[in-house]
Amino acid sequence: MANIGIWTGTSYFFPGDTPFGYYDYDFQFQQDADKVARFCAQRLGYPLVDIELQSGSFYTAFEQAVTVYGNELYSFQSRDNYLSVEGASTSSFLNQALVNNNISPVIRQSQTYAEEAGTGGNVNWYSGSVYLTSSVQDYDLGQWAIDNNITGGIEIKKMFYEQIPAINELYSPWAGLGPGATSAVGLTGLAGYGPATNFILMPLSYDLTNINAIEMSNTVRLSNYTFQLINNRLRIFPIPADTDQGTQLWFNYIKLDDRINSAIVQDGSKVNNLSKMPYTNPVYTQINSIGRSWIFEYTLALCKEMLGYIRGKYSTVPIPGAEVTLNQSDLLASATTEKEALITRLREYFDSTSRQALLERKQAESVARQSELGQVPMTIYIG
Image (cartoon, rainbow, N blue to C red; front, side):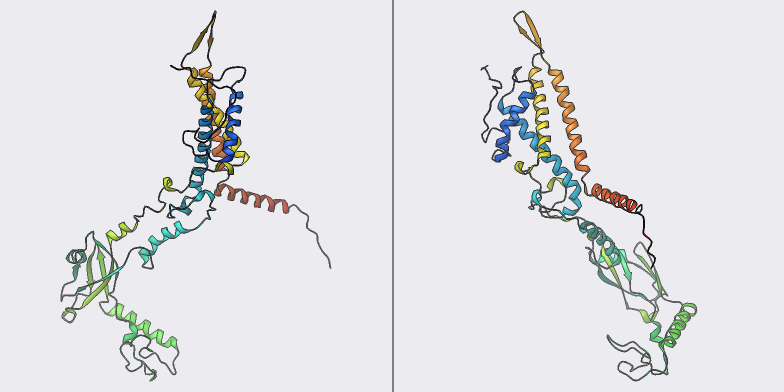
């Protein structure tokens, strides 16, 4: 095996010296690479002891430390902003973006409720009808769906089976002769005045009283109009008579497949999970001194780990008249402890600056401020 040199005490960084080259052309990274190498070597004991690493080893650890910092930072940002970014284009570049909190997820959630109320949403309502048959009270709307080539089943949302409006039976001698009042019985078209409602002498309360009386009479004295719908099996009351033969009974329905499929939007260009959050590696130049300090410490921990593995090849090294015991176990234990402590500290720091944590802090400050102001003596003015 060729004699591979170890750390000589100096290094000169050039683009291409790191495994991935994420930051090789960042001027500030180039400037710090050799400084970090010297920092780590001296912290490991150089020049009092030899450091069995090369400049490339320090550069590799430095690049990994910056990448780990960016990974922790943007993992936190992804968790904090995911609801606001979900559904956005994956071509967005979030590293430099200010993500505003929005209620888009709430609106998407509320659309499912609007579907049930028939006031919006992503599921279409359809109209259908069945023909009434004399003396037939029960109708299978599930079979109706099969007969109309609807797969997956339907859900009935509304039946247009209602009692004749009471106003249709109202006759008033007080009605005027204005437009739309051409008949004392029967409804008029859109924008008409309506039958017997163009009053000259009687107030509207009189008309409402008569309408209520008619509705109560129909409820008590007649068979009334109603229906029962269980599992798309329709039973109508009263039983259709001969005069109802062939009459169309209309209803609104949705296709169950539409409800299921509306929950899934096939669009690979949108953010739909954390792995598609459009964050990239950080720009080293833009990392402040707080972040760089963490990176330097994590680089040192990685260098300890590498040096521990290297020195672990031999537990002792013979020298003339004695042998030297290497500190592999100490280096690995120290590296593991420091890496875990650094990651924990960084995550706690990020969590303390989350949107929720900051709002809670603001609330606590507001309470404390009001409490302090409450201790200020209030002057009584006598005028």
